[in-house]
Image (cartoon, rainbow over all chains, first blue to last red; front, side):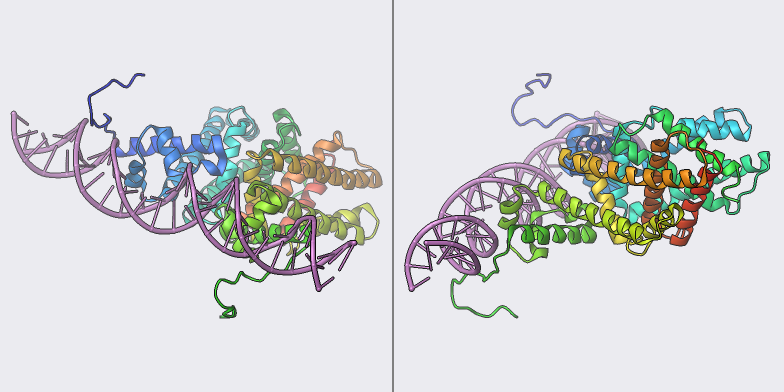
Length: 213
Length: 213
DNA sequence: TCTCTTGTTATAAGATCGTATAATTTTTCT
DNA sequence: AGAAAAATTATACGATCTTATAACAAGAGA
């Protein structure tokens, strides 16, 4: 009832926004739609409604909807990686403290959120059929693995244990965390976040004991 | 041009099949559609066309399409678990041989197939918004983890190392394998299947060395 | 051979989707 | 203040989707 009667045939009033701002708004609306309805939430109409604009805006700013989805993927990826990296940088600068912070951040409430993970899984399912998203994913995956590689490598140097193939070890640790996220998302009663942390620490302990030498 | 002119107004000839047979055919057609187009392949029309039947058949046998998708999910789950269990049972009966067979089967060409994994990921993305699929998934996930738990437990008993929480360890190993599948599916150049096997063996080695005690 | 059951085709109705296009409003720049 | 530029609305079109319903045909049993 907040829309006043502005007489017959008046157009809806609107605010004009900077393109980057609007693009971000639309991207976040897309994320909310995916949270609500999964894959079925990916639609020009639904996203436009969620953002409180008309459909044409999406065409105008993104051309085709897949571009918007890919952009939403980028937003989310950046956000997650940033929040984790931030937590690492705020930790003490010893390799162990940094790694602990990394693990803790990865299982913090911000990450262990079924909404967030649900969106993540939907993106995964889209990557195989979207070259655009695949490119983004490969880029981030590489960044992510390299980050893990650095953390693990520093720890190994500090504590003096051997790792035969640091890159592979980082891939393995990354896979473990992705797998735990996925398992918890699909089956939240299987384990608690603290147990996820413990399992990651166990993995690191295996590394320490030379299982990857 | 194989469809002969059968005069005016003749209906298409068809073979009548037992319901279970037809259901399976439709389920497998659904899988092929998901292989080809991912989520976008999930549609009554496409699946019916792929199966070479009319759309009404899907309604007739499954009521609504989500039921068909869930059924396809069940087919695939069963198939995968069976093929792995079979490989384990065909191995020597020592704990180590059985575990090795399990890992080898998990990274065999049958599993390390982007088509297969691609379908798998799509299913994952649907589970969160489909109670029906979620129920199937929880069932199988439980079975799967219990299988892993048995394999690991036997090895621990045989070799005499300690595992504090067997169930958690099994969850961790399962997560590692799922994560590796996912990573390889989205980024097939990251590592080779043999390296995946090696990483699993490294994980087991960590277990042996008491990292999970 | 005839009849009955039901698997299957055929068709339609209504909803939703993606994209294109034109009209209009807001903002900026002079 | 006025004009130009660009964001936004409004609308339409064609394609595709899901589901419902009626007609038909294939196979089984009497």
